[in-house]
Length: 569
Image: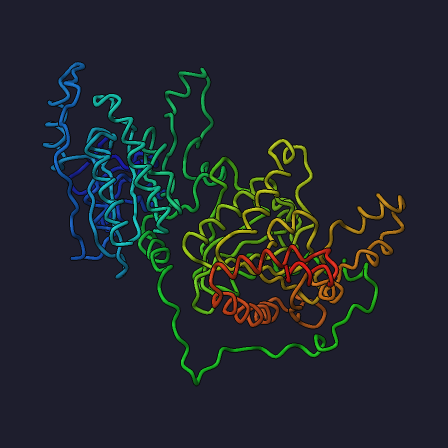
């Protein structure tokens, strides 16, 4: 932290401050211009609530929010000093009535309601007045259907207000529950430090959790934990970087990038830009090979081609298909599986949620890190969280499937792999927003299906989709590894066989030789295939969308006559 009046202050000369992390001297005017971020080590110093609003909101857009009076000292609390004296002192030192400022305003012209906390005011503690102000901010968001931004900095609940401070956790959580039910976006910006009752209530109930570099978040503070367990905590415990790795936050955003990042989330409900009628969308002509695509040739070679390590990954496609793609991380339970990635971006101007397996490309170390695209339960839970967010915000979901299957390791089993897959199947079956799946490479078993219960299923020209790998099938049924090619043929895994079975709806052409030969061209062809499918589904009302999705999957394995009888009844 920077040692200034907001922390352990060491002001060496009137115009200079010293960084508490790297001890470098920083010229005061530069320090202010850089939003109180150390130019040498990147340490983010604490800001006051007033500074937060000034930094984030457009100049002249702020309208303060207030609430009526709350009990100033409900318990008549006295420790070494009366609580009333501590309150008076905090007000005098900060110039604030309480530990939070709430306001309506705009960020890059987009309306927002902000509640910004101030750690200087009794450690940003959550008492009755803070709870009332945060609740009022949430209510204002609900009344106006304006996104809510929570900027947190707190040591926890205010002990001097006893159990009433504890009740503020439930009060604020209830207010955010109403926003969730109403489909209003809630963003949280975690700043250092955020602990206790604030961390365990409104700070972590947001749809998207942003965090500044190095900021700390947790229920119990490090000193409490170390005192309880009698052990030293590892370096970096509870910091932004630790939290991202463990799936608790979506993205780390440096302070200078906050306004731009928040604006992109606030713009999710912006209408799609209409293309002039005389300027059609660019639709690349399919390569000549796709006109003659068939299932001729060796089925096992088709599987090998679908697994080619240089085939484009989900992140490759995201960078080429979408504008303003923001990857979101974590299952919010304790992990961020690298084998599944997802985030929000714009496809032809339309905000969508993209989720997919991430094999890691042709770099072996990266493929190992990504578990070769084999998701753990945390990966499926992350996908489910993002799908629920898409449904809340009315965003179509696009899933890209390329996996040998679900992770088969013992840790995955201990964490409930079967349950995670099953819950995704149930969620997708009734998710009230359009879902389009593309098998971009290998669609392996339940690990693929857990991202593929969709309204429309497309497959790349050189993709495959099966209940089991040919190797697994040969080992179980043939009991002979040399039977792998025969198993590949028997499983009917290739696109035209899947099209005849009705499992896929369309084959997406690829560049000659496969998507890996020209990833840019492959993305252009996929984009051209996706746009009309998404537009078709957006035209359906939710009742019809869910009915037809259910009918789609009920029809598999049913003879045509039985299917007709079921429809007639």
